[in-house]
View: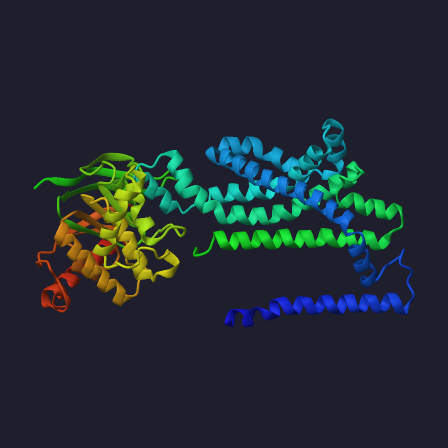
Length: 256
Length: 251
């Protein structure tokens, strides 16, 4: 009870800010008679969200699927590559620059190529999201694997631990907090990657994601629907971040 | 009596050219409690690590009669526990690393925890324990394999005095009961005189053994020993030896 009381400003304060902004927005739109195809008010956006929910929810589901798959693939790939890097300094020095190149090349620039090369649209989208999302997991986990207490390393050596034992009982548990922090960043990036790839792919039809709904609504000057799709993207991003933060706290409970 | 550790002419030079140790001759008998007493930088921790086999000596001969897995226990200055594991999980580690099944390891680890007075804290995570209790877990971990040789690298330096005295007493009674060979690195004159049967006073630049002192007081020792004239005289002697070692180094 006490913790709930202590926590209420953390929830109420941002909520109050949201109410103020939305209220001011609605008031301004009405007071200055802004046409809805320039800037719809929150009420109009809400109405569009309810009205278009069958379409938007299907697109949301599509985008979330790509995001979730990209995030899962980032976690696995990032972790495996980090373990490979941790085996020898030489492997890390040889391969790390390429991971950086993948990371720093803007995904909008690579996405058209990937979409040309890969036939299945969902796979192309997944690859784009993966390229954007895997780097934080890789770099954080690499750092984490190398951050184990040197005295514990000595202790493992004293008791004749095998390489495998050092990895599974010392290095991986030591890397867990940083791995989870990387995953939290990757969650948001996977969503961004998926959205950017959808924009570039521009795949229409019933099986398209939220980005396509934004494009489509823009062409049709259905600005309230555009905002509704945009709001869903934001909410999805916040939900992913919150879920991963909770996961991280749950996994690391009881640790220092 | 047989030697547990025999060092002759041991030296250590680091890659950057620092001569950490030179001409160390030291014999530690089985069941002895030896303190390496010296100022910081005299290479006493380096010497302990060489005995543990964690780093190689640059020259000389190192013979350790407890070189097999689990025969040497090591206690670090910090408790050095795995924060993700419970107290018993930490104590089980040496057994689990040598392939002993959890079912067999767990009662032995519980027994080791009981030895250091931590029954009932098996499931506690390190962060839930006090500094003194964490050090007890660390000692239990070093003792769980029933080592023949226990190496202690300033284990009590970070603890408050009351906790330190309590742990000194407990360590001494554990040693009295099981008679492992112990080598304790310390910069505390009082601790070395209280705990050991022999003190090797070290000097720095390069690290070497300046003088050896025998401490003949019988074990168990207690509060009475701490206030006895004999204890005071030994402390004075050890202090003088330490000052002389440091003076020579300055000259």
